[in-house]
Structures are given as C-alpha cells and as structure tokens.
Length: 129
Image (cartoon, rainbow, N blue to C red; front, side, top):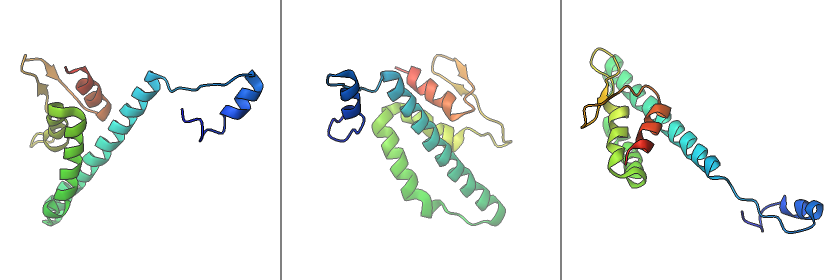
C-alpha cells in the first residue's frame, strides 16, 4: 500500500507502536476482478441487446454508430484474456438462438456448458488454460 497516501498508517503506527504495512489479499484482488468483469460484460450485453431491440422495433440501425465502442471493448478483452476473449464475444453477441433460447457452449472436447450469467462466464473463462 502506498504509505504517502494512506491516512490509516499513522494512527495505526501510534496504536501499535511500530510501522504497519497493509497489503490487499489475493482473494480481494480476485473478487475485484470478478466484479469488474461482470459489471462490464453486463453493461456491454445490455447495450448490445438495446441496439438489437431498437433495430427490430423501429428499423433504426446503430451498428455503425456503436462499432467503435464495441471494437474498443473487444480490443481490451483481447488484451486481458487473449484467445479466451472469443468466448466472451460469443456470449455477448451470439448466445441467443433465433427463438430466444440461450445456446449451449460446446467445447472441442464435447463438454457442454450453459453460461447464463456474466459470473458463470467469468468462472468458465478463468478455468480455461
């Protein structure tokens, strides 16, 4: 933790009588990553669905308008997750069948996964090697 910017360290030093070092646990960092991932994917998905609904209901296509934003999000996910990002793209853009059902993800080994939530998607991505 940055000692210069932490207002807790001096009072703790006064109480304990020695310098105190506070570090964030790995589980806390993992939880923050998980929460950020889920919030970003949820917002991305909501925006994608909103654009599709607008097109279906009014014929207004925001594809060209939104393309730069989607490209930016995709690039960042590729940077963070490499080729695993393709699964995230599938989840946002293609997980629904034409009848509105959530498609099952089938791996190369033939295992099936029903990823209904961003949290399930995150956990699946993290398990991949």
